[in-house]
Image (cartoon, rainbow, N blue to C red; front, top):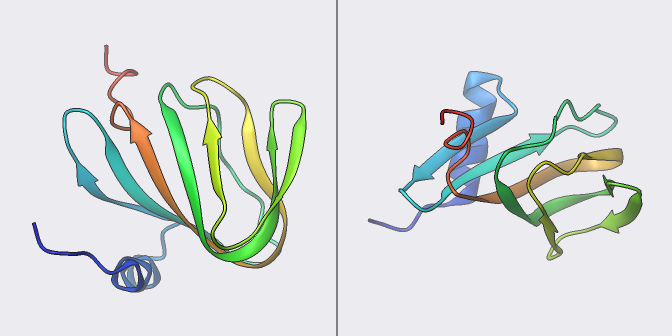
Length: 110
């Protein structure tokens, strides 16, 4: 597999007017880019998979359960499966790389 540029995935999001794009799926995990504009409301519900966010661009806060943390580029955030979480106070366009394990939606299919 050739290297993937996050900017290319974000450009696809622009063209498709979507919040996320899953660009890699294997039996053990999946990857997607998730983007929220400044001031947006994050529509996420808890997932059935563990996930790790890598903040590529932007600044915001994330609520994970009862905890709140500021996020900025370079931050890595772990969210355990089934835990309520969402971004808020999005000050500038937030682009995240998300690693799901197992792959997103695979446990919901069981």
